[in-house]
Image 1 (spheres, rainbow over the protein chains, first blue to last red):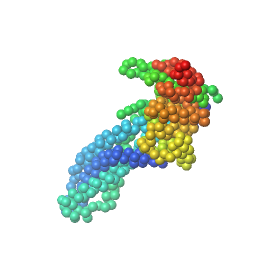
Image 2: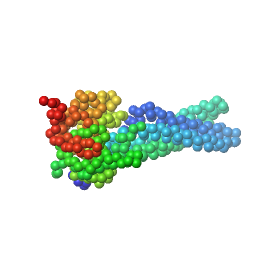
Image 3: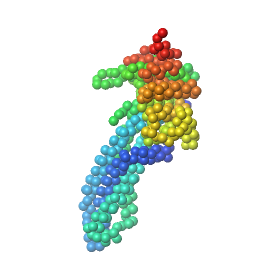
Image 4: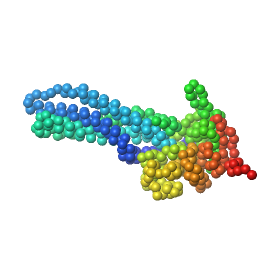
Amino acid sequence: MNTEQIDRKVKLPISEAFFISVRQIRIRFQRSKIMIASIGLGIAFMTHLNITNVIFNAYMADAGTTVEAYQFWLLIISVFVTCVGLINSTLIAVYERYTEIGTMKCLGALDHHILELFIIEAFLLGLYGGIIGFIIGTITATSSLIMQLGFDVLSKIPIIDMFKYLGLTTILSIILSVGSTIFPALRAAKLKPVEALRYHV
Amino acid sequence: MSDSIIECQNLSKHYHIGGEIIKALDNVNIKIKRGDYTSLVGPSGSGKTTLFNMIGGLDRPTEGIVYLDELEVSKLDAYELAWLRCHKLGYIFQTFNLIPVMTALENISLPMIFAGIPRKERRKKAIALLEKVDLGDRLHHRPTELSAGQQQRVALARALANDPSIILADEPTGNLDTQTGLKIIHLLRTLNKERGVTIIAATHDLKIIDVSDCVIWMRDGKIEKVERNFKAADKTEGP
């Protein structure tokens, strides 16, 4: 055999990668729940602040005044808190799978295949976490406003804008999730198979 | 086509641990014949696993050359190595290393996904392989739902998935009881004879080297001796 015979094509179609990632999330449900919770809570807090602000401003607009977005720094902090919690979970989630990564590499996986699997997984977790967080945040924000200002506020909810916020929040959630996964995953993907197999947490 | 499928020339691997140089492999020269069942025997720390990793392209040697099917392993880039691992080599580990979230069938399909085999064909072949190792009724069980012996048989089927020319087994019976271990070894031997696949099994268990065509004894990172047509029974049973 010589080098020309090697067609250099080891494949992992995106559909298969997707399937494997969904599998990972479903079977490691305990771990996935923690990941979704840590993203979801941060996003819920952020959404709560944001939606409160939006509805309150719409409410006040009738009275001819608006309130400045004083919660800007709180928003930033909530994003940071989400990040820290998330990085913690992803680090452990990646370390936990070193043997698996080593095995996959023995079976022919390339670095970018490993990375791909982790990114798809992080994407999905970010998506779930973002949507769940948004729903929770919206519910808490509206209910606390209802308690303070009465059922009047319900009519002030900007339905169309809510979809915009949902979209933006979910995108942010996905960015946070993928962003915090990419570095530990990249490090793991670059390992030589023997190093990954030798590694024990 | 050359007679030997694996050839190691002046192979050395040194590790730097705590300022000291550990010679895990020290100037090893071996040839392994195509279609042979070779056992790599030696106490733990003798360099079996290191040699195994060098042959399997899992690690790079400090010095020396490994030829695998006339390919110089250290000259291959990451893509070629991955291709080699996927198509030419099958690995069996002491700890089985099945992917925990996948069923037996999916575990065996994984190397075939990397090889780009279509889904239907993959499934058919995986089922045939599982039947071959007597696990036709365990297709959809996950590793945690299988016994150690069954897991190792799934691992064996996985190693065969892409019809490799070499199977590398590092302590394949290390986590199994003697009976189950012997079954695995005999299964390996059967596959070796049926398919002509070259098998290299590292072990320190003398009970399971009877089946080998060739036994390579290792000590302190060096080859102690190479024996062909070895019979453990001749040595253990006196007159």
